[in-house]
Length: 111
Image (cartoon, rainbow, N blue to C red; front, side):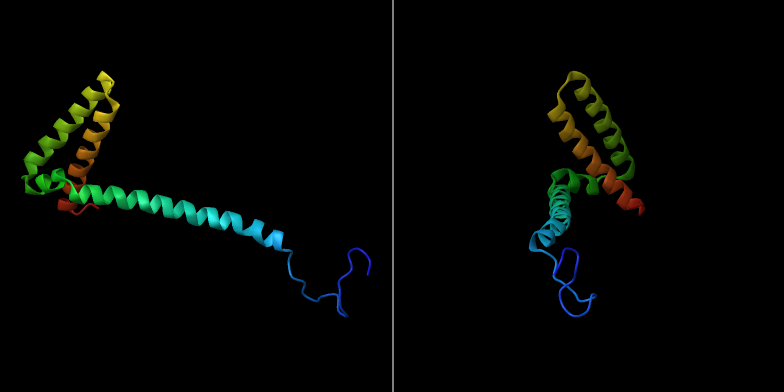
């Protein structure tokens, strides 16, 4: 049998792909699955933090106008912290503001 010829009586006979080719073809699929798992884990962690946060409970206990004032105050505090260069505190304040915004949206049925 010369180069380029198929084994067997018929030229259309199926031949198994080399193992290395199968492994190489699986790499993008496995990387995609791994990326989806990582992103899902992060999203689950953020939602869990939002649900178990005391800010979440306090936001549900507030009246509509109180919640609006709290959102504005948290946004102003976040800007102050960013200008002062305190990024970690600004991120925590932004997370609390996001929780309040989510509660406000859920009350109005936006999300």
